Length: 200
Image (cartoon, rainbow, N blue to C red; front, side, top):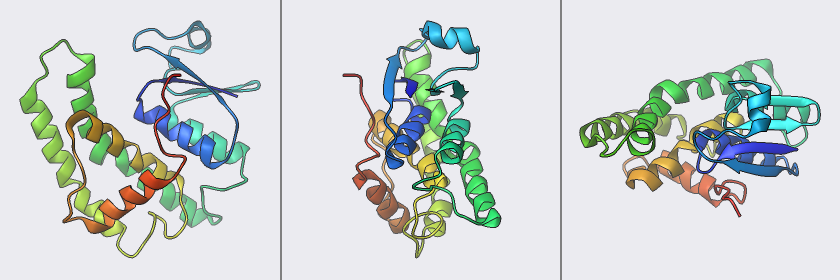
């Protein structure tokens, strides 16, 4: 199994966590921004970071990759058994992009994808909006180890990968005033599967 990914990409980070949680051997293939490998060019213009090659199957888009891995390798499940709870996982994951990723994406765009200097006013506004969205997630985690209770799910993986990125970029951390979310981030940080992979 091969995973094509950009160094530090939060979307690819989701795929690497799921692969490691499921103890699936894979070969990471890093590439640079704007320099997609020929293997991806041959597949589709949409095959970016992450793109998974698993035998004859080629899967791209982080949310599709992690659901593919769950469907293809159901051992060590990261989705609940019931249809209602599986829908809840998907609904939680669907909130991540509009509530948080859209704000973190502004920071990344200003720092990495636009000519310098970055627009600091835009970054400050995005971080402020990011922080304003956190209390709802803190409330969700009250009395729970993970978003769905005591078991890690794809919703946790989807949410978590924003935090290492924005911390590395701007030193943003969950404040002490949000203890449930802060403790959850610390639990996720401590899992051996969650550190970002780096090119060797």
